[in-house]
Image (tube, rainbow, N blue to C red; front, side, top):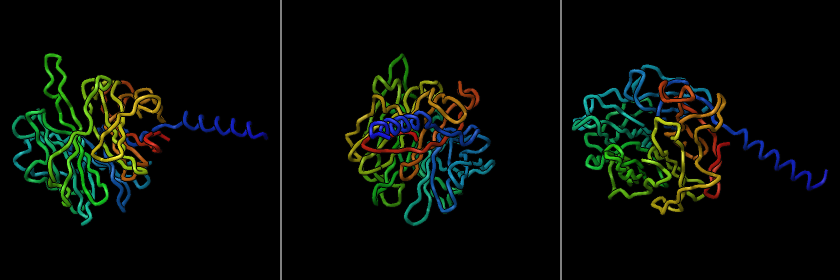
Length: 320
């Protein structure tokens, strides 16, 4: 076999592999805005409230087969005074501290008007809870629309949380407000802010009305930030990403043939995706969980959880 032919065959196989790479339906339940953590007992996923609980949970031993922990609520309450009596908890995310305790970041509706959310933290001895919500919110810019979609991240020995300022909740008269993704450094307890938050990215014209649902990973000295853009309840919703050499930036959104990472029409093991978004990296950035429309067409039947393996190199992410 000639060298040229070997190269041609190898290239064809590589292209074929890329063409067949797809996400996998992991949980055919309404399990929106999922996040994932790996523990000695396997993988746990957390999701926006539904199915009769404030926060949903699922478990897997291998990241492939998942089971909804139906009826189990890791954040059963009671709640502190800043949280509305109907908490409407969105997009929870869990990390484990060095002392072994688990910290969950939540977006909960605030007592002063349930149409605004703020970021809070909750602590538990076990990953399954029960989690006790801190007496004060971690980030609560109600005058700017509130804050949602918190994601915890540890860089070396330093804890951070990224989140979205929910400016689009104030949109009116066709005016689009900023929806910046913010980075808050935390003290060693992973719940106390250390200094002021800084802006990482904001919406551009290509993003439509917003950017949201951030998640951070660091691979090979490069920082990766996934985020979703466009309205969550439309097929335009996607999973995009940005890269930086420092966690504080400057961050560069990736465009062109390598981005967005996932959009409607991309393949899965059950057919084309529709409305993929709300993604979360695992700890080393090799895997991702996200949601997409259960019925493959619209949000009417809710959003199921999907998983995918990733490769990251030189500022580019691929589903593999």
